[in-house]
Image 1 (tube, rainbow, N blue to C red):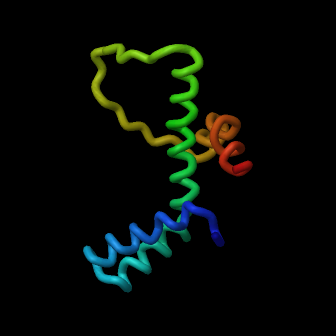
Image 2: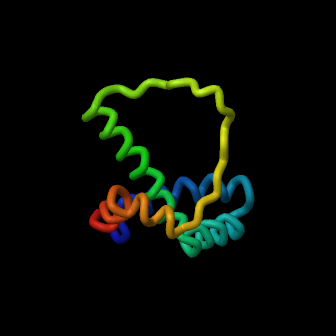
Length: 96
């Protein structure tokens, strides 16, 4: 299959968006997702989950430890993300 099996999932996304927003708008939105690097973000996201899942299996189960702090969202620059996650996420994704 040209493009791999990951592109097959785009068909269901196109069908869902087509029904909700119209066929032409859904095609434009899917094109925009690929153009802005959404596929790379998805690979990064899945590899993050897989990395921590494998670490949990290798080392032992993880448990929730309450710290009393609230939920914090922090914005970090892309170069910092690259430094921290390149060896465990991006290089493996590129190899695949």
